[in-house]
Image (cartoon, rainbow, N blue to C red):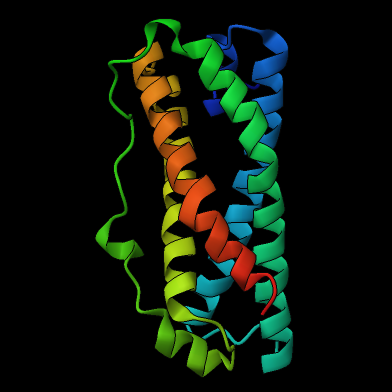
Length: 184
């Protein structure tokens, strides 16, 4: 019995890459961003559910700082491969629309009571903004995978528009917020 493999967001990006190396570098860095974004989001989501893990406020503070450092490092490494990919993709791709939507209602959380209950001293607005942008990144990649599975992947122009939007959102204020959280 053979195992059937389904395409992923990485396959879509590699397929549209003008240069194989550019696609490979972008996929590797986006994978690091996806993994660290999931870790950050899951950490604060656990606290929102009342799961006090790690077990002490000091350890929770350190866990938030480490999670912010990991995603900040991954996002910082994303800038150059994403810029190169967009330049190579741009030739005929200026009129597209992003393939993913903005944050949903479930992602709009008041983090102040959550952080207070967890004993974590961090600016709740920075946690909220970081969480929203990272959740959108994860959802965008999942959406690209879902589109690939049903063979309705976005065209070059839509792919360019979505990646451009992600770049603006992630490498702007979200990166600044994560840098601030990584030194709390």
